[in-house]
Image 1 (tube, rainbow, N blue to C red):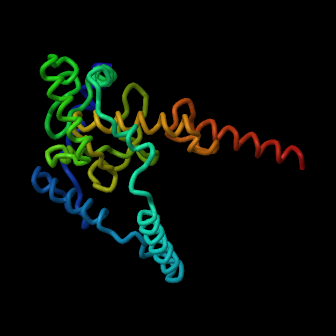
Image 2: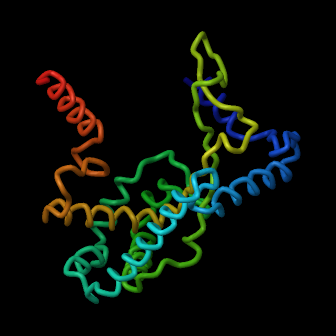
Image 3: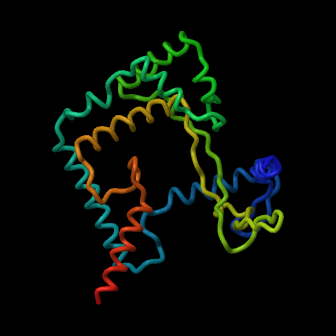
Amino acid sequence: MRFLEQLFKSAGKITAVKTSSGEMKFDQNEIEDVILDHFSEVFSASPVPNNIHEDTASQVKQSLESLDQLLDDSEADAPETNKYEDIVCAPYTFTELEDTLQELPNNKASGYDRINNELLKNSGSTAKRMLLIFLNKIMEEGSVPECLNHGKCMLIHKVESREPLIIIKNTQLQGGDTMTPMNYRPITIPSNILRLITLRLSKRMSSIVEENNLLGMEQFGFRRGRSTIDAAYLLNTLMHKTRSNR
C-alpha cells in the first residue's frame, strides 16, 4: 500500500504534454500554458455544439433563451423573504461550530490558503470564537470575502478502458494518454473555512426539504439514506416484470 501511495503521488505531476498540433512540451511553464489554453477554450465554448444540425441548434438556442426568461420571471415574482430563510441563515452557535469541526475529515487537501482541517479542529477556544464571529459575519451580510473565493485547481486523470496506464503485479490500471490535456478533468479545492459555511447550509437545507416533504419520492440522488443504485434497481425490476407479463 505504501508503494502504491508513493507511486501515485509521484505520478501526480504532469511532466510532459502534447499540444493540439502534436508538439511535445517539457518545460513546466509551457506545460501550464498548454493546459490553461485547453481549458480556457473548453469553458468559453458555445453551449450549442457546432457539429449538430442547424435546425436542432436553433431549437436548443431557443430553449435556453426560454429557460433564461423563465428564471428571470420566477425571480421577479418571488417574495422578498422566504419562510425558511431565517432557519437556514441563522447564526452559528459555538456548539454547532465545534460539532461541525469534529466532522471534518483528516488528511484532506487544503485550499489556496493552505489552512487544513487539522489546524481548524485543534485550534484553541480563542481562535474558534474568532472563527465563529467571522463565519456569522458572512452569514449576516450574505457575502463571501474575496480571499475565500480563490480555489486551488487540480487535474485528475480520466480513467478509461482503452489502454493501460500502468501494470503492477499483473493488475492493469486503465487510463488514457497522460500527455493529452483533454484526458484530465479539473477540480477546484476551496478553502476549508468556506466549507464550514457550505456544509452548514447544506445540512440545514437538507433538513428542511426532508422534514417538509419538498422533494418528490422519485428524487434519489444527493439524499441521505437514498442512492441512485436503488433507483436503478427499481427500474430494472419494473422492466423485468413488464417483460414477464407479455
